[in-house]
Amino acid sequence: MRHLVLLLLVLAGPLSAQQPPYSVFPPADPPYYRVRYEGSTKPGELVFSVNYTVWVPPGVKTLRGVIVHQHGCGEGSCKSGLTGAYDLHWQALAKKHGCGLMAPSYEQPDKANCQLWCDPRNGSDAKFRQSLTELGAKSGHLELATVPWALWGHSGGGHWAGGMVLLHPDRIVAAWLRSGVPPVKAAEGRPAPYTISEAACQVPVMCNLGTKEGVTDKTNRFAGVWPGVETFFTAMRAKGALICVSADPLTSHECGNQRYFAIPWLDACLAARLPVKNGEALKPMSAAAAWLAAREKSVWFPNEAIAKAWLQYIRDTAVLDVTPPPAPTNLRVKGNELTWDAEADVESGLASFIIERDGQFLANVPEQGKNPFGRPIFQNLQYSDTPTQPLIQMRFTDTKAEAGKTHSYRVIAVNTVGLKSP
Image (cartoon, rainbow, N blue to C red; front, side, top):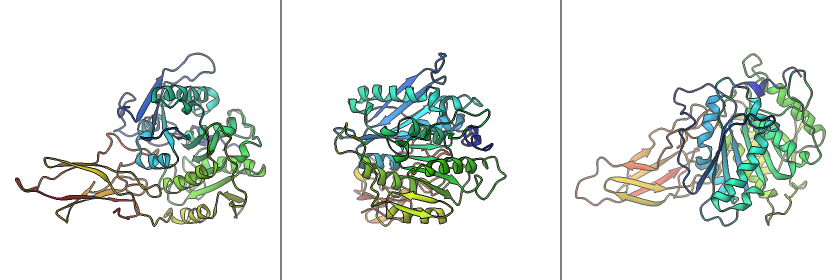
């Protein structure tokens, strides 16, 4: 018990010298929308300023839900949330299910108490729900205020997402908790524990962490994560909760390759639970399709495919994918500059593009994606699983094109397992 809430207070990662100030973020022009709130001095209200950015899939008539990508604790991780709604891979998941993609960014000062936002009872729950109403009005999708939520959270964001499951189980499709969980047992000097309701046990929950966070390495600064996760998992599973644990064998507190399991897992849960019509209750998970795997304690999966993906993930994180990414579209050529549009592969994201000129290979864009925490990816990745700033553009300049000669160009997308699009 003494380890339970250590993970809630640690920084989600080291600060980067390249982290922008909170006032520097991509523009929120449609299909992006943003609201910002100043911190409050009133008791019980959110003390930190915060902005919420949501992406609405172009052409969607009525949103069916919202996927929330919640950063972790610490100034660096909070700033990384500024780009969460612009992530092409997470957008692909949101578009598939007719959902918005939201990323909050709490303006937490360096070394400030993370509990003041990552515990949703300290005002962030109320402010989040207020933002949905105002973003719904801004975007012309008033249903944003009432649709279900699918939650992903890292570190303190995992505490927040788990707390929201326990506070609002009837609103939540599923929750992925990376390296952070809410308190469910009393401990001296720690936040008050949540009550585990029967409704909360019907929400699919994945507790995900790096094996070096106390599973195999019990000496580093993040070694308190596993005891907290184990306590949360045991308490939930004892009440029959639809919960699982997945340990990343390659990482510590960084997010690594977890998105290649998290997104398919959320995909399965969204497909199973979103109602046909807005306003209807979330569908219960099918008991017939569910799988249980027994190790030290049983873990729950929504279906056989996810159970098999879990086995791959906990072995080496190399979750299988045999489907190529979508082909790029709308290739434009102006002078010697090429621009194009592309959507990410839901399973494996987007690693790069191959440029061909006159039927011959010309270049890779980028030459090498940057991700020190996992597979190289087109948009690059920060510690809390969000794109770097400035956002990488789908653009290439052909500096070797022959003046006065007409050229033919093709662009091919490549996902992170190396499969190529048409």
